[in-house]
Length: 70
Image (cartoon, rainbow, N blue to C red):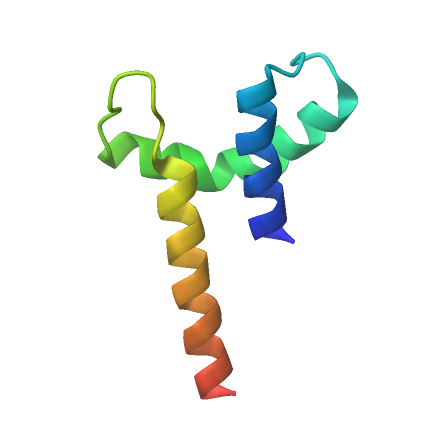
């Protein structure tokens, strides 16, 4: 569910969704606790924010590790 939320946030940023939209607010509240710490350590590359990609990659690694353990 978290990966889907991050993906939606990226799509919303591409289409320029209104931040006052309730759906945008929900997705922002779900993803910001994960993306904000990553942004502190990663510099922005111009207008491109790579924190969603890094978060998705880290979540995928955690998911794969959990699947091998259980």
